[in-house]
Image 1 (cartoon, rainbow, N blue to C red):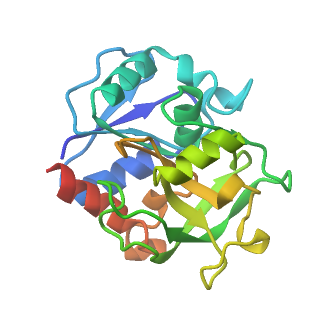
Image 2: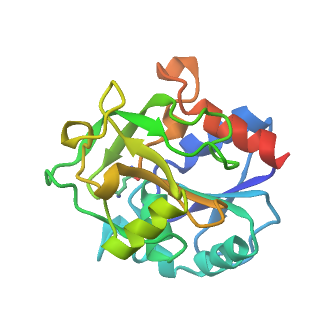
Image 3: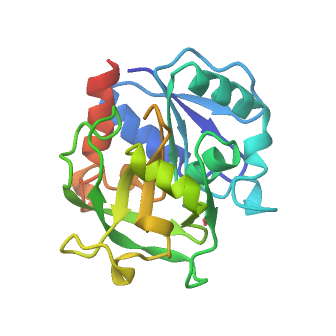
Length: 229
Ligand SMILES: NC(=O)CC[C@H](N)C(=O)O
């Protein structure tokens, strides 16, 4: 599996995900600067976490207009898998590759902790390494993770199995105590309709090896390698 990681001014998880991809695939991904419009031919494009353009205007809003994103949108439309992590999820919604928006956390605080998640749909290259309804834990670190979409969009998301991961309590229940940022329908990770694009607020690349103290993110990377190699 060949991968590229997009780097914006203010990205800070680009190297984390690069190391995780290198461990999963055996080779370094291409690192592509936001001003570049020629993206190498790859099987997976990762839009990493961080604070692109300082989160000015709205998280992800400026990055979505950068030269490289025109090419990312074109590749996504032709079926290349695109993974957006945290700020990457925000950028993918701003670029309209995913529906809805990420608003300020309901508690108005930056959240930095590990959260409980349920795998809602294991039928994709991104989630094939998990079982449906599997409970996992992953770290989050964001102030704008409160997923919002209007009622019609939420109905479409649910009807089409587009929710990849939901925030839950440690025993797998969906309620306010398990939803750290107030996300609609407890959405933590969302596919496009074809399940070729995934955006998620938690960071699988920070829970991918024993030294991280948690390997629950590793099946996401291993599943991609299996599906795209
Ligand atoms: N870790 C991140 O990617 C942070 C995302 C975003 N800048 C926020 O704080 O909401």
